[in-house]
Figure 1 (spheres, rainbow, N blue to C red):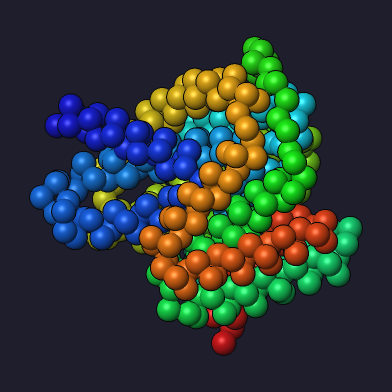
Figure 2 (tube, rainbow, N blue to C red):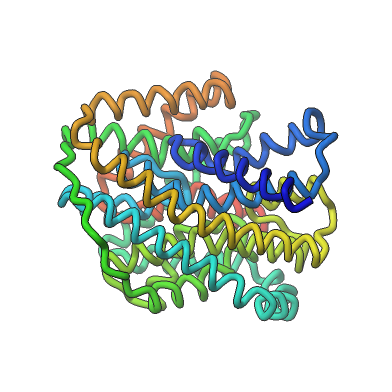
Length: 395
């Protein structure tokens, strides 16, 4: 049994590496794909092995997905905030350091998650019913908070409402996986096109020994903010990271640590929430819920073991792959690489979301470019999810 579990953990780590490195492939999309497979091709595989595979893939993905975010400027919804501080370090030849800061945050999050798991279960049990009754009002408060933190408050409000209306329209169309073209356009292809227009050049990257970052304040901020995603639909790692930064007030490097920690903690808390309140807030948790309806304590303990082991492996895997890419990234034609990335995104959208998805991608890309011209935080574009969720609860 142990050998099989380790085998599926290894396979999950490979799958998470692939999904993390390919722009546009979000773990939620992979969760939906695995649900469809589990009902057909994978029905003969014991559920415990599928859960091992999904858990290790999900955690590995949270480590690796900062690589395309920082090196290519093509994030998903969990890493869009890493573009600005990450790109600033990249342009200074410190892309390796930027990614490793997120990896240190993720590794710290894995260890913290194991330590606080059972106290967190008790806290969630006692507070869930209270929070559930005020979900839309909390989302409204968070949305307002994101806007008033901006210097250009009216611009931020306009961006929030514009993307919110776009989200309302697209989420009510009959598109397969509508979030894929919507979020890829707003946060991915739009950023790549702007980089192409600005003729971004990547300098030679320095691969020097990184001093151990200060992780206490970033991790505390991430730890306080991340459980919000366990309760609040429409909330992602990006919003949790902004709230965490309000709590901890860290510098740019500390913010990258905070982002890494938040990304991994949100995924970890989704498994804890699945066990505690039977709510799945990530694609990986949804897939596990489909495979095994009621998560037992023994299964949760297995998942925690998988998280710890795959987290340690993913840290060193991130370090190795980042070194390899950092040595070669300045020798690669960045414009050609960006065009290739755009091509991959378009192909993925066409294959998964068909022609209507491609039209959505184009509209979302244009909207993303327009919204970025207002020079406000890209997190305000998460109105595309927050506004529809708020209206869903209120109406």
